[in-house]
Length: 413
Ligand SMILES: Nc1ncnc2c1ncn2[C@@H]1O[C@H](COP(=O)(O)OP(=O)(O)OP(=O)(O)O)[C@@H](O)[C@H]1O
Image (cartoon, rainbow, N blue to C red; front, side, top):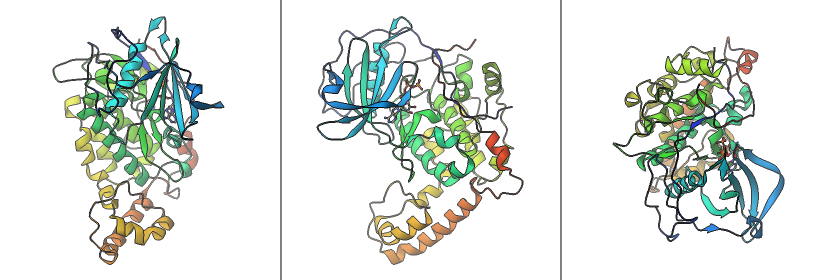
């Protein structure tokens, strides 16, 4: 039985990688995209960012004490750039891991961040520093933290369905950008989706490209990596990895965000793998019953065993479940004239605005009212409605379980 959402060991059987000759590949910072150069295992290696060798503290005040997050080989701290007063997240990555020089993995992570520099759904890379033991990525600061916190929160603090839809659209936009650029993330999970702000709920930022790979048609990558609960069946079967591998994880993520339940999590890693390979998933949980009718079919287009039969990021964005968000994209004049009402309702979080500003407020008010009715209807159905008959808060809360340990370099056997 799968009843918990939590931080779980990460699988990572990396193939050996070639090391680049010099710390910083030549190139200017004004080019928008890096030319992807990769070695056999899908690691990009040619970065454009200047690697600074002075101490980070010459230009930044690192906020003492509180860490923003931590992995097995990295720690992330808040820092403030003295010249601008801007806050950033400094990710300190150890170059030597388990006796191996992993500098090339870090260069790959930098290169992917450069490649995604124009995508607002991916965290921005500001600067890179290097010492003898570490590399430090100075990243845009995502003040809202991980969406994980709200996935495991009590019902009254968890995401509403409307919020999940908006965030899911943004996640798919980011993943679609990466896939169009031949990058697969391979570690999509709630801990790697951050928020620009928590209250009010901001926008998502995808982080942690440590396991990502650059894949091209014809080239096969087979590696066992990821986080057990989110890993796709083809990874367990040592079959080729593709963009569909991320889409599986997005299916698991959608389920988790909507229910707080990890759909494949078993009592042991082996049980989790068995559940995944048998697609042993329950669509009859109480938490799913309160959702819009198109929510479960959305998840089902992703949690399909055959990678080629899974929805792509682009087709998932077209799924009926996510279409309400299109209605929520309001033109600027409407946003202005309805602003206070929208705030009161707390329903409208338009993520973009149409260029079309020619319609006047009166004309758009009508569609806005329809929108509010539809949004209110959705909110009424969402899982935050604790009064749903037969849905006991105690029971549903027992399905949420927090633990904070993240392990790496784990194996499947
Ligand atoms: N830009 C950021 N702004 C705010 N917090 C961040 C940022 N980047 C990372 N964090 C926090 O630090 C955590 C660890 O970051 P990240 O996942 O990039 O490191 P990692 O060592 O690769 O982790 P993991 O072991 O989970 O792969 C994130 O889950 C998040 O909580």
